Length: 447
Ligand SMILES: [Fe+2]
Ligand SMILES: [Fe+2]
Image (cartoon, rainbow, N blue to C red):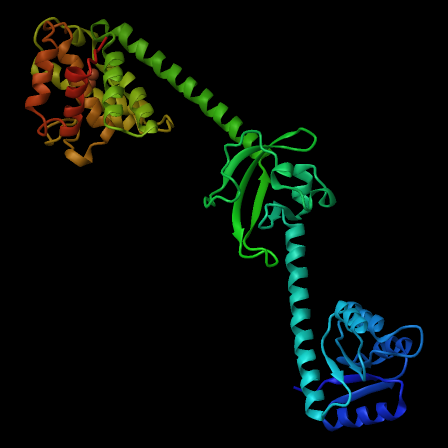
């Protein structure tokens, strides 16, 4: 690294010459030797030195201390003061400017070199820090989120333009204020900014003009705030438009749900009008299936899908001649084979409707059995959808306990006996247990 370039400011010619020699002997380049404050500025503009060696007491209108303030603040050039005497007042004033070093005459070469090198190093570090601070401050000011920094006493020490806009407090008004004064929340349900919970929280902020603004905020500790101990940074954003979109989405989802439910209901009524013997069967199966699903803790979305699937699970019977459906005597093998086509037929009807749940699959699988003896595919255990396993149990229990054209009702006890006996064979164990609990312990009724 090449040696630094130094400007010497000394109004005694002899001293100035000695100093110049000493500086050169140390290997530094001397960019000039001047006598007054005014000459310093002119020389700096011409030759841009790295450091100024300057007598505190100068001739002319500007003294050394005033000149030092300008060279550092405006040009980023550090000044090392040289003085033969220093009273307390001069030192106090000198301290107000960034003091990079003092040399009291007379001094040795070694001392001069050490002071110059320390001053250069200190100046480099301070410039770097200043640059970093400017960099950070530009980011904080141009970022799209509101940012408020609190000191250890909970007073605002920084507020960026976005935070000023949301809260309605200008920087001048907000600095030094208590956080709660500026950051006014409608309900105080949010954890205090000092809590250890850093996850984003939603709240409604009341601006200075009384506007209610939905926001999302996070807060985190600031390691130290100018020696005052840990501070806090609060980052928040206006989520008005996001909330609006969310509400619209929820509304349209609810409308879609209602439309789907209405459609499914209409289909279900159509089937039951044609097949009065199973009138109400699908509705009661849906009720029991929903209860079993909740007992098993199925997620809400799953329960919704299962309910709708259960309401129309026998839709495929529309392809079965009504004489077979309402036949008062026992079915022949052929008739039974025809009836067994209804899950597949139901699937074909529903498969192209884009339900948000696997309705067609649930309908297709409602006669599958755990041991693979069901139809149409002979699926086993885990191959069968959880919703279809629940539906199977609900379907059998309802069907057996109700009247059929070809037989009287067996009653609920026979129905429960059937699922108990085939628990883990035809029907899933947890589904059977949940159904038994509901009916025997929790007084669930089908009607
Ligand atoms: Fe069925
Ligand atoms: Fe059924």
